[in-house]
Amino acid sequence: MMSSRSIKGLTLLLAVSAAGAVQPDSCEGGCKGARAQVLLQTGSVGRYRFSARGSGEEFKDVQRVASMSLTDQSALVEDLVTDVLATGQPLTGTQKEIIERLNETFVTETLPELQKLHDSDQELLNVHAAAVAHCDVDLETNSQRVSTLNSDQNSTESAHTECLAQEASLQSSEKLKHEELTAYLKSLQPPSSMMPEQRAPTPAMDDFVAQNLEFFKSLNSSYVSLKERISTVQAEVEAKTAGCAEAELVFDEKFCLWKTEVENAKSNYLNCRTATLTLYNETLKTAHSNAESRRADLAAVLKVQCFLKMLLDGTTQEKLKECTDAEHTSSALDIAEPQLPELNQRVLDGLGAPGSRVQCTATALSVQQHYVVHREQGCAGPGVYGTSIQTWGSGEDSAYGAGYVDDDLEGCEAGCSAHSDCAGFVLRDSDKRCSFWYSGPLSPLAHSGYHCYEKISM
Ligand SMILES: *[C@@H]1O[C@H](CO)[C@@H](O)[C@H](O)[C@H]1NC(C)=O
Ligand SMILES: *[C@@H]1O[C@H](CO)[C@@H](O)[C@H](O)[C@H]1NC(C)=O
Ligand SMILES: *[C@@H]1O[C@H](CO)[C@@H](O)[C@H](O)[C@H]1NC(C)=O
Ligand SMILES: *[C@@H]1O[C@H](CO)[C@@H](O)[C@H](O)[C@H]1NC(C)=O
Image (cartoon, rainbow, N blue to C red):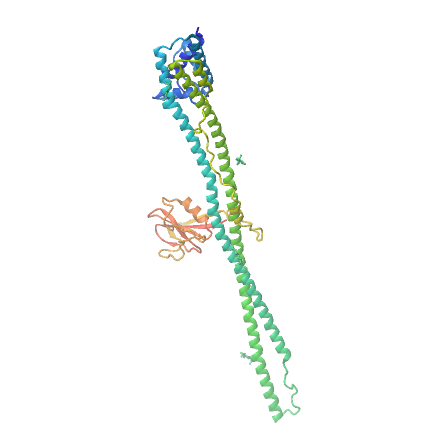
C-alpha cells in the first residue's frame, strides 16, 4: 500500500507549489512564479517565512511541507515514486495536471531565474574586477602628473646648480680683482719723494711737481677704476647670491610638490588595490558559494523534473535508477573569474624615490587654504585680464569661466586650492559662475556684479 504520509506530503507539495497556499514574505500580483521560486530556487526554502493564509490543521501541514528543504521535498517525491513502483497505482487526472503545471513553472520561471541570478552575480564580479583594474588607470594618470612634476623639479634643480656655478665664478672673479688691485698697489714705484733742497722755482722743483702730479694722476685713475671694477663684481655676486637663494626656494617647493605627489600616487594606488580587492574577494567568495548552491538546486530541480516525467510516463525501476544516477554537468552556472591586473610594480617604481634631500615639512596636501571675499570687486579690476589663468601651471586646461555653475563656491575653492598658481577666483553674478581663476598678486578693484575670492594659505 502507498504510505499515507507520502501521498499526503506530495499532494501538499504540489498544492503548495501550484495552487497558492503559501506566499513568500512579500508578493504582489504574479505570485505563482514567486511561490515556485521560493520552494525550488535555492534549496534554502526553510529560511523564508510564509505569511499565514488559511487556518487549522490543514494549514499546519502546508506550512510543514513548505518549510521543508528542497532535498526533503525531493525525498518526498522519491517516496511517492517508490510507493507507485510498489503498488502500480496510477496518478489521477488532477495530479497529472498539477505535475505538468509544476514542470512548466520549473521551465519558464525557476530555471531561468537561477540563470538570471547567476548572471547578475557574474556581472557584479566583473564590475568589481573592473574597479580593481581602474586603480591602474588612476595610477597611470597620476604617474604622468608625477613625471611632469619630476621634470619640473629636475629643471629647477639644474637652474639652481647652474646658478651656484655662476655665483662661484663671480666670487672668484671678485677675488681676482682684489688681487689685481693689491698687485698694482704693490708694484707702484713712486717718483723720488725727496723734494729739492732748494725751495724755489727751480727746474728741479718743476720736475719734482710734474713727476709727482703725473704719478698721482695715473695712480688715482687706475686705483679708482680698479676699485670700481671690484664693486661692480661685488654687486653682481650679491645679486647672484640672492637669485640662487630664490632658485633654491623654488627648487625646494617643486621638489616637495613632486615628493608629495609621489607619496599620494603610491598610497592612493595601494589603498585603491586593497579596497577594491577586498570587495572583489568577498564578492568572489559569495559568488562561488551561490554558484555551488545554485548547481545543487539545478541538480535537484532536474532530478525532480525527471521524477515528474517518470510519474507521467510510467514509473519503472530502470527509469528511477536513471533519474537517480543522472549526472548533470553544466558549466552555465560556473563563475568565470576575471583576470585581475597584478600590482603594477613597474609604474610604482617609475614614480621615483624622492628621498629626503629637502625637508618638506608642510606638504602640499596638509596646507589648509581659506578664502576672503572682496564683494563687488574683480580680482584684477574691471577690464583687466592680464593675470587670468587659462592653463594651470601643471599644464591642464583651467576651463576658465566654463565650469562650476550655480554659485558652486565649494567646487571653485577646491579647484583653486588644488593649484598653487591660483591666487583667487571671481564669482560673476550674471551667470553664477566662479571659475575665473587669477594668479597673484591680486589687485581687487570695484566692479559691480563681480566678487573676488582671495586665497589665504594658513
Ligand atoms: C633630470 O636631469 C638630469 C640632468 O640634469 C637628466 O639626466 C635626467 O634624465 C633628468 N630626469 C628627468 C626625470 O627629467
Ligand atoms: C680721481 O679720479 C676720479 C675719476 O677719474 C675723479 O672723479 C676724481 O676727482 C679724481 N680725484 C682727484 C683727487 O683728482
Ligand atoms: C584577495 O584574495 C587573494 C587571493 O586569495 C589574496 O592574495 C589577496 O591578499 C586578497 N586581497 C585582499 C585585499 O583581501
Ligand atoms: C517539462 O518541460 C520540458 C520543457 O518544456 C519538457 O521537455 C519535459 O518533457 C517536461 N516534463 C514533464 C514532466 O512534463
